[in-house]
Amino acid sequence: MVLAIVFTFYVVYTFRGQPLPTSFSELQCTSSIEVQGQSMEPTVRSGTKLLVDKCVDKQNISAGVIVTYKGDKGLRIGRIKERITSPSGVSYKIGSDAKPNEENTVSADDIIASVKN
Image (cartoon, rainbow, N blue to C red; front, side, top):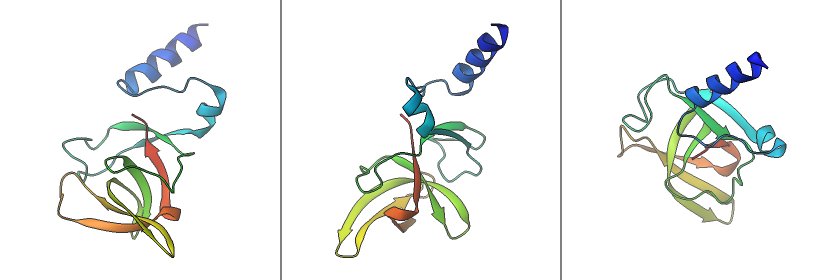
């Protein structure tokens, strides 16, 4: 019982302001990440822990959603700026909040998860 209370306090304190999973199926899709770097500042600071949804529909992510994706240098985090549909499939223009003029075009297949909000 004490362990359950401590765990609940840890989760609520660590991920304050983010919705926690409410069902087992939602829990299976949820993972946590710790942001490293300043690319999403001031919105998300380095060291912030975020809950992400790994079961997101990668073909239909709206502009403004923060996602994790496979980048040239490993796992990256950024904000969807635009959804692009072409005969070869869906891709997204993704940018950082710290450098709004820089963006990457990423295939929907390279999206790993969306930040839960």
